[in-house]
Every structure is written in C-alpha cells, then in structure tokens.
Length: 67
Image (cartoon, rainbow, N blue to C red; front, side, top):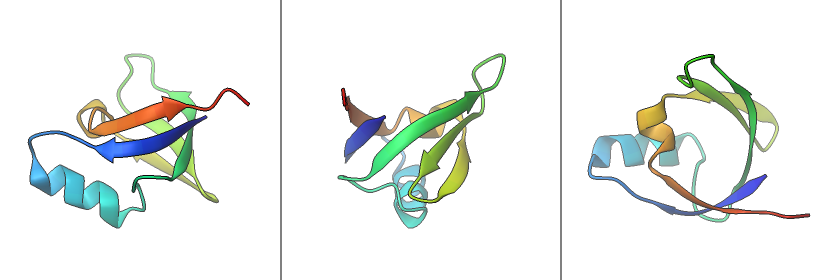
C-alpha cells in the first residue's frame, strides 16, 4: 500500500489522464499484479482495478504505508 503524494513528470497529458482516473494526491493505491516484464502493472484504487504502463506509473510519487 502507498499514498500518492504528488504527480510528477514532464508530460502534462499523462498527468491529466491520471488525475481523471482518480489518481490524485492523498489517494491510497495497492499494486495487485505485475506483468512478467513489468509492463503493465495493475493497481487497486478505491474499489476498482486499473492497469498502468510503466511510463504512467513513473509519474506517481508515493509514500509507503507500513500498517
């Protein structure tokens, strides 16, 4: 589990797309599955699953939750 702290990256279109999917600062996410080569990865946010490419996931600055 991790909490999104900030959206980073140079591509504003990717950041906007992530925000539209609910990936905003303060949101808790969990990695559910990882493809064999690491792309894409599946995360759980709130009550749904979302697949992200590495390029998209790299835009999420997170802080791990150690609960």
